[in-house]
Length: 327
Image (cartoon, rainbow, N blue to C red; front, side, top):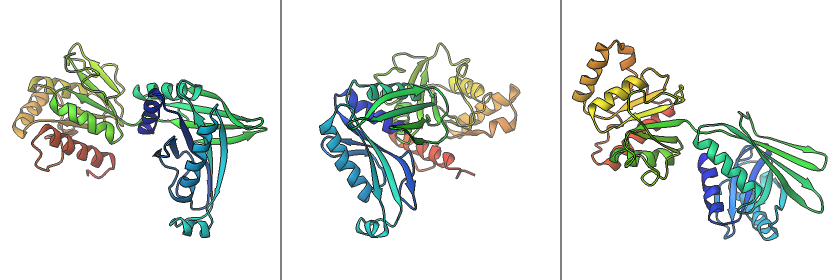
């Protein structure tokens, strides 16, 4: 969802109108469940998917027609995915999909709501986007509200002549990258690409800045690596990468991180450097169980040498751990 919201906001910021398609109900063995989203551009290209085949083709055609109508036009589309239709569209499924389509203009209320959701996701704050459509001479999206709360499952209901769609907008797992050097530069890019909420932290503002890390959700300039985890939400879903510019900084950051509940902790460096840091921490009262939480040397063993290759090896390990395959 993060990538979809970010892409929609980017296109709207560039002045492009879009049609949003959201699966609001499904029956039978349809290819996508409620909450699946797609954006249709004026040239017919799409971002996201509502399942491919017949449903997607119909949503694209109707979406482009809504863009021509403009002015917050909306439509509720039902696609009957019978076995015959499914066979014609190379899909093994049956049942039906209800898809809410909405024309979205730059600077309009929906664009503002998506910008607010994007800002909350960058901060790791869950929200719910509520969209209300009313039927007059045609269906129109008339209201968009963003609420800061956990939302459970997507919900769609009809209230008289109105339609109400509520969508949970859940931020992805956070990836905290301590250090803003060359390895961090590429790791932040790949981390964002594979769906993490990336936060880069360093004590040098000439390295930790938006120009250098445009893909990051947050860039934090620390006063010091001492107390670097203070104020950060490092629960069990948090991933932490330690790639600072020196062994002492790595050691201090690792000590801070091991006092949190972070589910993944990885530190760059050779085994010799790692063992010196571990011995220092054991001498300061950390336990072997604490030390065993750290993945070091970080990344999968694929012979990585360059910063770009090291970033790929780290990303591979992050995916492996996130999938529960690292045992």
